Image 1 (cartoon, rainbow, N blue to C red):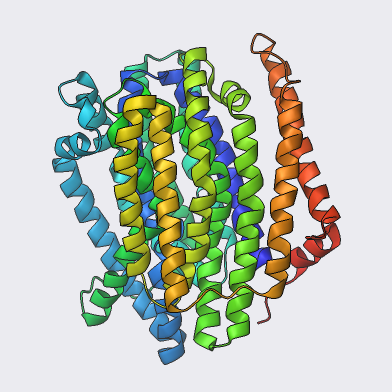
Image 2: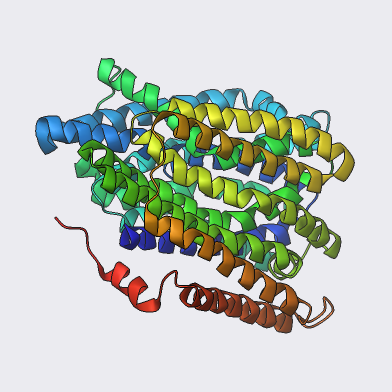
Length: 512
């Protein structure tokens, strides 16, 4: 499991790093004004739908169903089932994109009511319609990625999203050189998103098309049952994005707040993507095999290792982002139209938003235990509860503290989601944590706190905001690298794991 987890995490890390380059270019091209708010609101709509389908969402229903079809009728039956899924999902996504395109003014008004009566609304509608072709490609892309994951083939799934960012960055580099006006740049960038989706689909189709044949649309009882499980699972798996949308609804009434929250969330997406996407991609097949085998030791092993990886990566990332929020935001985004005031507001929002990270990762680690048992309703209800809490808390705190209060409301919603899953899982089937996990988890916490304390003391020695940009960036990167090295050292000193054990885990292959 660790080897597969590392493969997916590496691809996600590469994609997220390219995402920072992309978002830095967006900040330089658009700044944090009305044009940026409109583009980012439209982009967030497409992003939510994309992640509703991908990042483990469809895995929640497709992987258990595919394995069941293979066990019952062999690989040929599983391939035919996959062909029906691919055809049906593709048709449904294309039809949905057409309907959304027609109703786009109402959709944007619903997710950003603060835009109504302002030019920002029309900017967002135009941008979102140009982005819609991407959704037609997202359906088949997601099905093929889930089929590859079901067979333990994670490399292509992990690295194909790189094409999305490479296409956008290439176009934005040209726009920056030409010093394009923000409004025109936003239109070109929105149109490029559809092209990026086509590139990703083409790459996957070369390897994954034969996994689903014959291709046809079907709404027979088996397919209706599958979709009945898939839709709740997809909504639940994209909980972090839904909570951000809920926060953006509140933020749309305050100028620039949508942009500040977006850029703060992009920093949160790096560790969340590395851990969360890998959890959704790797842990669901792992848990499904364990549950179908009926072996309690296999279930306990999968749940324990997942919790260790989740906590071991989420805690140091949470502390690091909180301590280094302002220098990180300044290094990545304070260019062109993005001002020092924007950096300060984004950093404050990031501190509060980062409190949601451990909760989001817990949700990603706990949800597969339900998905493996073909229960997608419980995670859905927990997500809906988190959305309600987010809207209520963000509205109240946003009135007092602005964008930072909205970020705190999102964090409260995330913890509400996680606690609901913990209570329900403990009451129904009980989470199985083995002795190794009970020994390691407190030590992981101690190692993360020790690393956080070192970063807090060292952060005061970073160059001031007026220093040369290269000096600021180099100093910050050295400090981050030192923090990672210190955390690894603390893990070894506290007896959690060592380099030899980690290398052996990477080399280990799953038995055929």
